[in-house]
Image (spheres, rainbow, N blue to C red):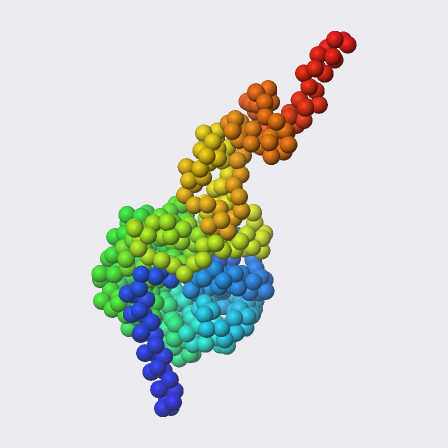
Length: 426
Ligand code: MN
């Protein structure tokens, strides 16, 4: 190795070491977004390279620290997407790091390098993985020994370094079902080989919060070189616990990087929804004591655009970004919200970049909301309208604002006097 190259590598190593110890001491949680990679693995979803560029731009504006943008090993459009994303960010100093997921094979790392070569050395990265659970070793690697798996992981990391990658992350796939002793062993080996980040993956989404707490602490206490790398988490949502597990992991104080996706989209029932975890951290500083760089007012608009591009509607019931969070139907809640939004709302719509609340008109609506709706539409409220509406809503499904206004219009057209005349005329 030439003198210049060796000096340059020394500088890079020094920079990285500085960065790792800073991140580990800091109370700032780094956010890695996998919408473009795991999110794109949502069954039936695919994104064109330029759509990935558009989303990457929005994620950067929202303040994510790194973007897991592609699985370069799939070739073609994935490599193209990486090229266009790095080209889009150009030499911007505060661009997020762009990374590619790679199997522990040279061709995946080559493909990642082809896609990311134009990004600065600290702005490009690889996330290398290999299956480590008994299930994965048996069925994917035909009962390969643990030594062989570790060997492959270490070789892949050395290869990535030789290719010019400095930001190398390693995650045992299916870490949650991997024997703890083996996990410890492989983490130690990859950190020794030069991985600057290690990840804990609940690939199959089988963890519960209590287990998460113990497992994360176990890793932090048993991996002897734990402080030489940052620690990231990646939870799946098969038990609807990805948010809870992510937050519990963060609560241990050992996590440096949280990975999630917009809306929690991803393989099977998806990942930890980035917006839910970020909002919980924001609303409970006294519990988590960690901040992120996410501009939460961008959450709503970013989610809208992501869902538009993947061609899926945001489910109304989705927390934080779904419509129902600012929609109420029950009379007592509506009256409360009208008196003071804080009665039934933990944050106002504007905080996540949404506009207005909806007092839903339906079977459960109370007088306050019904009269308010009538007034907004130019009708006077009356007991008769209210009674007729409630009676109709009790016997028919799907009765809402439209029906209420129809009743009001009918009653306006047919005033009591006219009604009397009609009756008299017979
Ligand atoms: Mn995943």
